[in-house]
Image (cartoon, rainbow, N blue to C red; front, side, top):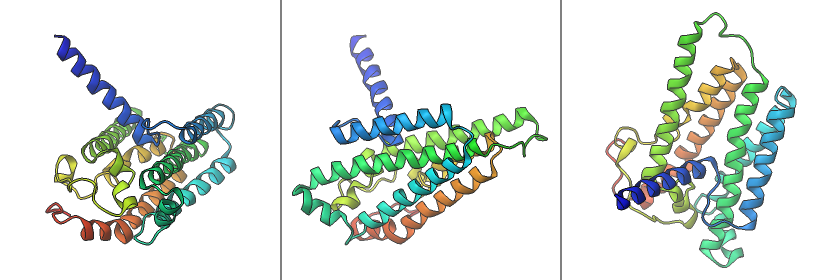
Length: 244
């Protein structure tokens, strides 16, 4: 009984860590940089939700800044000859450089996601007012749950390090190529189905602007996948899934 309880608690802790990790905050290791970035992110999220919820101009600026920084950073850092090489040289340690990169990327990733939700709520309309409310809530609920579960499932299968592209940062494979979980059915569930919750939030708010920015973000992430990441996978991993 005691062993079963400990196993349940461990699984629960692992799930909580996974949920927090996929938002952009990695709990291990905790250092001054990621603690500060987490605090700043949470503080701005609270302020924007409580006092600036309907401010479209701030929401738009916020979105543009973090969309550019997030997408720009992975394009600049992760390619074969990207800034990852400079970071590793600067920190004189591959692991220290990765921890710095992971902290910054998590900060950008979190704010990128929040900015899209913020833009959806600040551009709330009644475009779905004539749509049956019950059906609309069911659609929103299904999209959000399916998208979030697939995102977590994918992150669980590949691990948080792969979620933050550690293999691309260090320039080599750090585990075997994953063909289990949702990867049995689709080559990139995280960038595809795993983004559905963004559309759900936009639909819930009746925000056409929100739908557009979520689509733009998804297209940009997929562009990185096809232009940079897919080439890395082909070069480094010898046995991709059949559906890749």
